[in-house]
Amino acid sequence: MGSLTYDRVVVEFEDRMLAHLQLVIIQKLRRGESFLLSWRDAAVVGDGRSSAWLHPAIPLYFKFAGGHAPTINANWVAQLTRSANSSQGLVVTAEESASFDANLPPKVEPAIGIRSAAQTRATKASVTER
Image 1 (cartoon, rainbow, N blue to C red):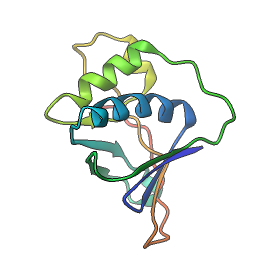
Image 2: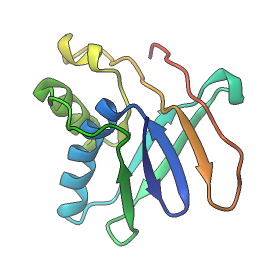
Image 3: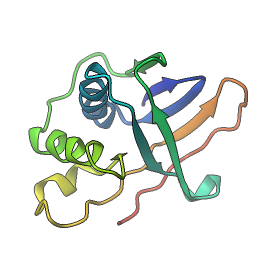
C-alpha cells in the first residue's frame, strides 16, 4: 500500500494505482497547472468523497510500498489525463474502466485511506460505480 502526502494529508492507494496517478499528477504540476484530485471514501469511515486542490507550490511526496515499479497501462494514463484536464478535475478511477469506451463514465476507484499529520483518524475507501 503506497501513499501520497500533500500538505500534511496522507492518502493511501494501491501501488499500481499510485504509479498511474503519479504520472498524471506530475505531468500537470510540471506545466504549472493547479487542479482538483477526488476519490471515493470507504463506508467503514463514513463513506463519501474527498478532494484536494493540488498546486505546484505545495510539496508532494509519493511513497510506494513495493520494491519495483508496476507496468504502466497507457489507456489508464490517458483516461486519468482526460479526467485531470476536465473541469471536474482528476477523479481516481479503476483500471478496468480504461479498457471500455471513452464515452462511458468511468468506474470511480477510491483511495484506501486518509490521515492528517494533525489528526490520527484513518479513512478507508470503497469501490463504487459512477
